Image (cartoon, rainbow, N blue to C red; front, side, top):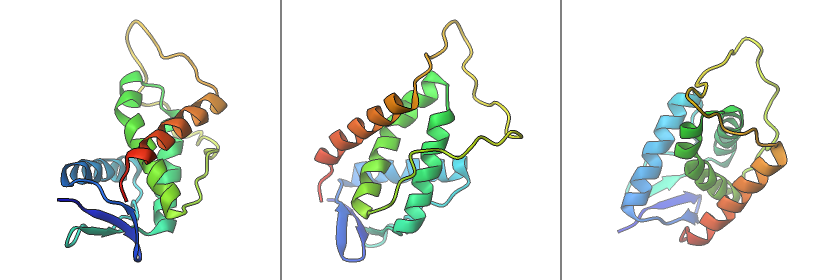
Length: 144
């Protein structure tokens, strides 16, 4: 069995039920974490409609969040999800903003890495290149 993520009549992704379920659970986690709706409609009759504009806003918020995260475990847990979202956003024709907005000075630090090691700083180009490469790799495995 499989499910469909679509924009209108165009199928963007046709994953197995398990991959779809896991992806949608992760979407729900990040909707709460980011306080942004994803633009993914409910899964009804094995189909989920994607609102490209809302999904682009979700993708932008996710990228901004991911770029300012400096916690090794959080980065490891989220990187595959971020790459999957980027692949789906590309298929949906969503304009992705790779340059995050300026930091909010009132936001403060959170999820600071504690312990004997801190992840090395990664420059913006290396960060973008890494996510783009992972997204392209995943796109090859995402059946339509």
